[in-house]
Length: 346
Image 1: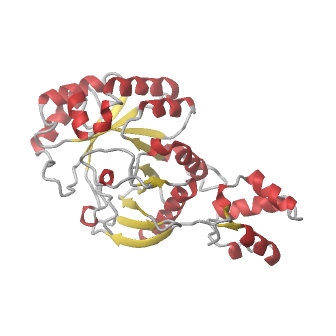
Image 2 (image 1 turned 120 degrees about the horizontal axis):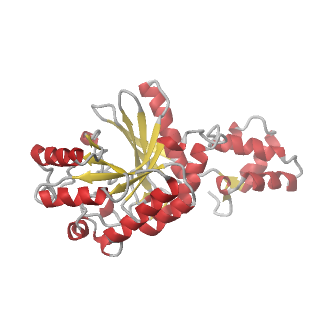
């Protein structure tokens, strides 16, 4: 692959129109190419059959399409599918198709590795190699949509940015990918069906609110006691709970959208009444709901799933305080595809 060639999906529609004008063709050809790239998911110029062979050759001379390849696909006994996705430079990320009776959800990655240092997460133990480009995120969704149609006989219904990486540390590219996923010129999905999950980067949560995004926000919380949260998520020393809460108030004031707190309960770490009461107090500050997530082992004896009584105590106290709470059972554990398990083992 020539390094002089430009990845054509970095160009806007206007830039594509200009390219055709400058190369002796009509500008509307740029619209056609844009549709091939983003709406029809073309990965080869020869597939663009409404262009002349000569013009397809011109595109081949100037550009590349740096599309992803599903390097390895694993199927779980529960129907979950994990893709090891090879990028154009040979690096690998993972994405997951999660089926339920009523929907199929794509869990997509935003970075190769991760920028942050959550101690309970396998992905955080990989060093961050680079951010994903918008088209690399977009392609993960396209691939999972095809798998959903093939194996579950229905199109993809939801997307969660809960794969590898911290989405808000790759803000520009993540936002651009969502623009193309939701655009009628792209996949045309409703932003209401997209959830961005962050470990909690206050400055960027405020930026999202200022940018008037239409998708949903989830925050990986796990403790409303600062000392415990720092133990679980050491970066929280510089992005503490007060700052996080301030940004979430700002988010709700600007968007009128409640936040979802993702919360794993571990044995001996955050399974006491002190932690339950702290969470209730935190939740009362901003309209929210709590999603208690089953812990998935990552070969670290320091973390163990809390017992059923601890989970029941959380649910009882949250419900008593009229805070919506659900428990999410993990899927795809047998192929290391569950929350916190994505670590490129394949």
